[in-house]
Length: 602
Image (cartoon, rainbow, N blue to C red):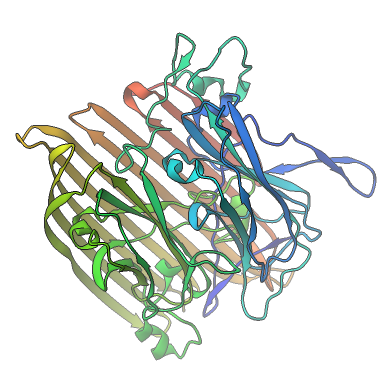
């Protein structure tokens, strides 16, 4: 039996899901448990279709296991904190990977709410993830994330590591019988790889072809080395978070709820990037499917709406400095929980973070005084979990900076038409931002121009007296960064484009003979990202498509029967850095196709 997270508009049922990570070579073995008849049952492994790390087929130079903990009370769980241990000084490494492993030994086959988890080092968030859908048997999953860009934190002593795993539930719900065994380790890799002394995982052998061996050295592409804006790791990272018993994130309840933290920035700073972590829950878990208040009021519905547009605002001393429209991650149990076993949706096990370049504000921030950085959610309802890391790059001496900055502009159009419970609601938003900065430091005079455009389109339809809900949405962003020296010579010209389409249909029909309600569901989601630097002759393209169809019979809060297919196609072209593709087809919970290749298709 599966638990379904239901968001009810009239007789409509909605749910949302999460995504996991493929099993690297160092994942836990397929251990088994025994049932009442002493038969052995294989563990259920969840995974996410994503780009494997080249280090997945290499033995680390050294590793540090920091936490082994069993979470049993996840309704009001407190953070678990231990001493952080950096890699030993004798360990040679250039790449660091966070290894987050979970084994679900829960004594029940269902639970309410979504499990959300976070990992922090002294308040600096390094991972936000979610729990997989519960199963009748023991299950496990493994998230590996390149955390090399946090170098200035992971090399420090006398810090703490904190982990939170919570189920975010409704007021009258209860979570019992959960048992999550969580292990957190840091793996450190050198560039040296002896092809003679390491056995490679056969499943991942095609991938290693994308990362050539030259004189027993592994050529690490930008897959591991972060690109713009993390061309090099920051010299310092300041957490913009709030220490508390239940995590370092700020909990934002509505559009008027502004959370702030004061920071003081060194005058030697010449570059600053705010890395924003965002997740949405409760009444805003499906914010992109929320109707406007006018519809809710006219029909006397006991729900919260505020429409289908959300934007996280970042302010400095009360002034708008940047905005983010978040990627619509689908958590486990969502839309149709049968979709997400054993392959989860896009971004579920490693929720995306968002980078906002606030270098244009350094002229205001580097005066040795406290300044306020704040977070707010446009039209948000309860609740959002938000925090950030402020990455700072330092010079040897104080920096002088001249900035021309245009605050983000916004155009929004809405068209709402409805009669009774049926209606069509359209929202279109365009944002733009431009800044030019001239920085004089020991590195010389560097001029950087940044332009960004954001487009959002959302069309929501309610049909058949509100029993059928259709969503068509697309988010597009384009960022251009041009860097020149004091002679006007181009140092770098980067273009980053991202497109996130999403189509969802949820239609409830007549009840089934079992007494439940039959709900037909589809989810079509995409993630397309490209990165190019003409000066450096670098080009990378990522495309990930997900197509799920099925139906379920819902009784109470549980799915008692149904059918689901999950088809995913993933491709990455890194140019000279190599290519990778994977196709996964799942029918009724069985992986019927799982094909990987490393050929570059032109």
